[in-house]
Image (tube, rainbow, N blue to C red; front, side, top):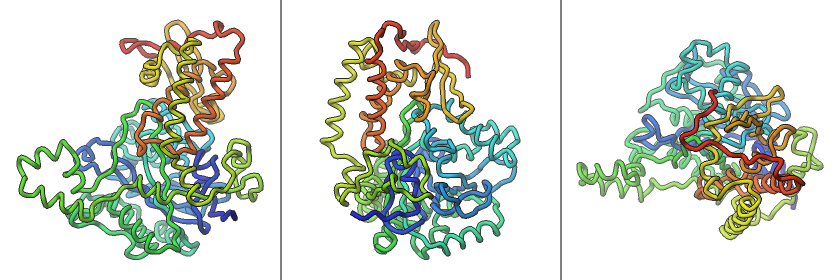
Length: 496
């Protein structure tokens, strides 16, 4: 089957979507709606709306507030606006490289395997020092939790997200660059009439007039992130030449609170228990109207759209043109380079229930072996591993950009690589790495499918797990490794 390169979008979309080597079928560049799940904090605790941004595959940041065309090897960018970016000027929007947005790192091969508050904070401050210091130097910008520029660094540590992506032309992208570089970047955010969804809607309508709409009935006159994603998806399906595809990035396993599915207004009232009960008591006459509106046209499942329209074509990186990053030409993606037929391609990306069940069965066998070899005390240990690791580990970034933790438990101090390039690096404790990867796979396999990474990503996880097991099992003197014992809930942590 013939391959069709498409700007090498997402560099096969950052690691599994990057290193796995698949892209959306079609032309050369595009734009996408980024639909973020809800953090369930602040106003989102009530609205459940989540957040939305714009992904550009051919536009990159010249600075956080200026645009330019991407150079070869760059993966595009994400532009977003917030109530308060927290910077020294009240900018309406910032733009960051895609790799920084997703994982907080410049090189996707250094991406973190763990989502923890301490590690995310370090990546935020590294980005600020490298890129944002000119715009963010006041104490409120540097340290305040309300400074929302931080949400644009390592977003997948905090929540899952979807990208609904279509083709664009060079002329369309140049128009956007000229427009945003010439207009004042001033914040006029208003939650009702000028919020993040309105911002994204205006950009999409510049590319494709009337392609995104607010849902007056379901969102009570406002524009919600889900309405923009739903209407833009419908528009793309009505225009097959746009080559719609959907990408899913799951929240990283770890200790940060799990995000929740984004909802529109009537969906939140109808499905949220914390609002449905008060509605039933105090607004029972309105409840049938809410339910009718939701069932009539308010339903939209990002997960179903992803399963129906995933990126299904692969790039043969062994014969890739020079514009393909070198990292995609190595062995890490070799077992994904066969181009599937369209249906098989969807299964390859999403996985079948039977395939996931088989992995769970195999994982149980690996865990039992790890218990027998005293690598871990029992299976329940894996459920608490990340929380306990937080209590006695101090994360840091190496000089080469790799991610690490100094783990001090009881009387021992060891180092653990917590990035894709550092987990097996010299100095990363083999037994601790094995226990870490067991805990990561354990959390993935327990997640519902809308929170679960793609099958392509999971196969990379599984390959790492098997490599870690072979390293430990192949050790002649297992007793020479101290068990990766971590403190109990009552134990104290090393300060960060």
